[in-house]
Length: 61
Image (cartoon, rainbow, N blue to C red; front, side, top):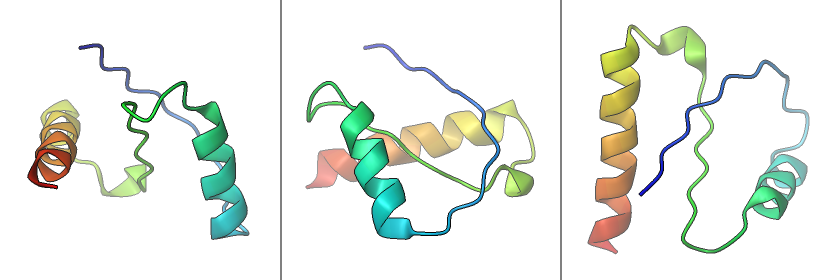
């Protein structure tokens, strides 16, 4: 399993257009892209916990 954490700044004017663009970046349905407001991130450990929670939520379905 490979995990990449990338940082970007931007404004979302259209949620549907943004989600369409994000989905077009994926190479397969096994990939997960998660967007978040980084202003609420306290530390690297906080990011790691969020990634783990994202994986956990997909394993439940």
